[in-house]
Length: 145
Length: 197
Image 1 (cartoon, each protein chain N blue to C red):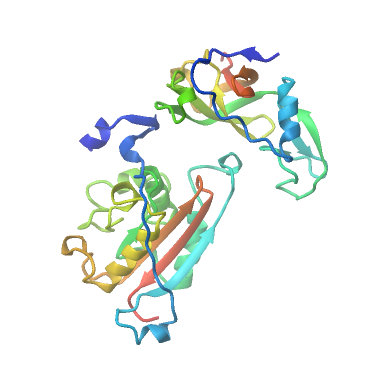
Image 2: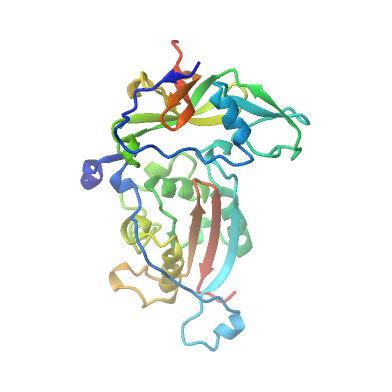
């Protein structure tokens, strides 16, 4: 179930994801609260971001598979300045590059309740789909050790 | 270092002085055959080696993020030139951020992976140091012209007498230039020399 964020609704709207024919189905499923990965039917490799062919074997046939949502922080950064006025109230906020159990990496913001100081390389995280101003987006929460 | 440490955080771990300038500008160079260059007024600078490697598009797809395309790009360029990093009189390294320089110097073989920070200390990459880096100030200090001025600076250094005396590398014979695009997505290397090939 997508959760509500605490973003300021008085400021300009944040940029919306650019949705094209390669990614439309990914965003549609995310809108239903499900973060799904393409899995190649030929070699079984998961891929992200979504695209038409497998980067490993170039095959076009794939299945959509709901991600377990479990992963670890590969690296992270903390924004101390807003690069868009929509994020002014959110600063400082942390964005992590997470390696999911499916061996793909996903950039996403840490959920609002997460303290920047608690994020480190190797942190165990869980992907949650949150209702944000721009629509549903994946975010990460910390899993208690 | 004091100025750097006092500059505000932009995106941790980068402070403002870790980030390149934002500029409008241009540079140009003409490539021709060594044969034609003999008749031209300026001293020729020879393209001894070139390389490239473009490991990924999105950073999410990078196998790992502490080595970029520079490793394979530089190996190709140095091998083609028949030269080693130690033969370089200077290096003009694409410096969108300070850490890009450290990673590139490591990838190019000037020092071991992970040793970049320690290696550049105590003036080693200053004008009087073992390997002058970015004698023109680069994207961090001169201007961001997409790396064009890294090429033109290398050429001027090798011609001699074309830059202010205080930034001329004495007895320069060869230099390496790096180009970089995206977030460690694309990389190219040139090895230039003023000695006829």
